[in-house]
Image 1 (cartoon, rainbow, N blue to C red):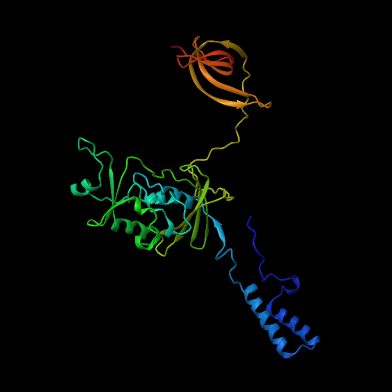
Image 2: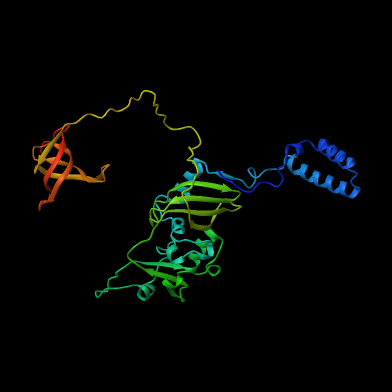
Length: 342
């Protein structure tokens, strides 16, 4: 729920009437108090202004500048088409690689670390000047070429700015060849922000705020803000840390592809298993995890293939790693539901 300052046009119940009744009521009060004509004029003018806004159907905040949650289809568009374009390098994903309050402050080194996404062939002379070669003359790392023209194309399409209109943050980390008016980056790693997952969003007029848990940089929730343009495109405005959004998940619009009824389901009753103490019968160790008891003790729980051919789930009490990668010690294991023959 959003809270905010109260509207100055909210009135008491004594002021909630139509224009004629309100005007008559104020007039009678003014006459009864023998208010001067100038004061009466001011009161009536104020009343007319209040009526014009309150009673004539002027649009409220919820209709013009109010906040609304994005629909499921809108979220799907940003997750599947705007970001994460299938089968291609999505330069828009890279706009989430740095924090900025305005597009002029985008870290362009992070944005163009893997190139612009626009094909830019290089001559042998260019490669000779910017490439890294081993003693045999072989290229050690690939080189990305980013012409100023391509950089401007990406920036104009996504921010409305040219390179010269930005703060040029991070551009000094690239190598620049003026005779080709291009920047170059030789590297063998990547910073590609794959798998953008927008989980919630809201819209205020033409401004769209998209919320995501940044599992790529693993530093919490972020909010990327976009501004819709007249042609339906979107420009990046900011990318900032955010609290986890309190926006309800919405269902996609339209009819579901498949409906699964839950009326015939019955609660699952876990089968009681007998715990049997085992010692040194591990033939192949499976996956495990650590759990804590109510008393704060730490237990190791894992599955393993026993030397008797059965698969067990065990609580480990005493374990020492052997050279075979298995374990020796003492544990309690549940009886197997099936045997595995090898």
